[in-house]
Image (cartoon, rainbow, N blue to C red; front, side, top):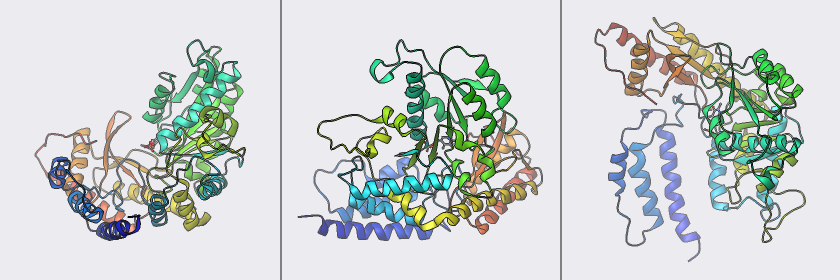
Length: 471
Ligand SMILES: *Cc1c(COP(=O)(O)O)cnc(C)c1O
């Protein structure tokens, strides 16, 4: 038996299917053609009674699911805020699966740990964050927020004389958590995981940036509880960044821990032309990002960055007599999981391939395309860009809410590109997020042309179609 005979056939088929998929992306309609039921029918829902050849299974999977795949890696996928997969990361990801390292322990998987250590240092260097910070490789932005805020919760309560690890939260002094009114919903979710309840909401300005004066007032109006302030680098609608210098100074005067959710915006710090957006963020205590977003590392890879490595270890480490602990610290002590994929391989590969200038150029290109979209949309009759386009996000309206929703729906029917519908500051919007490394000027032009046709067709059509909400 052994790996080789089975692996050769299955991997050869996977390689061919993967290249076929990637080469079809430029001309494929972006939305999926098949429904969930179609794909279930094509695969067959019955559990087989016996074994099949792995290569045949790969063929069946690739052929049956193909019509149900959304062209998310297409250069014309602008939905949500999700990013794509850079080729160096994709290939490293295949190897990560083949190598099959359980990346928790320093000495057991030296290769994974070495790359973890190098990628950690490179990320901190590129972002201009304190070089002694710890970086945990988690699944995505939500878990990066969770990991950082777990460290925050435990640290501020420890300073108040309460050991959460020993005593839990019942009977503790409690923690006040302050957030801007337009923080990402995942921040509320992780506060629930952490037993911290609903946060206190601080008003924001018209771009969704936290108001530092209001933050100062909220901090002053508090009780004796220790405080955590969660700021944001990159608002999913406007792309705006909180005013870090002022907000962090105010929070630190009150002894608060400051966390920055930079799921897609943190990498502005790696691009000289956009670095001003994050000015002062290096004074925070923790930072979270999803490396799949702006950095275009394969799923699943989030980075939880904590200034004080001891605080992160205190929140995440455990002891097992069977584990082979290392005095230098083990990778599992920086993340919620024990067994996990060696995610740093892909981060290393993308950073090694792009280099410092390539990362800056990637960020600048994404944001440059967003500016091109804003200019192009402004030129469409009846269309309006609602946000100041400072980074990678554009929110547009096409008249009243019904019209805007119809344009969103018709764009999906058209299939040239994927743009999302959303609601921002009480208005229906069509949202464009430029997050994929592979988007070209031609992709932007083709999408704008489709948008122009869709918007114009609508303005000439007297028929009011029922609006369909698009997630
Ligand atoms: C995407 C996003 C998140 C959540 O990240 P996931 O990687 O999807 O878990 C959190 N905050 C912001 C600002 C985001 O854009």
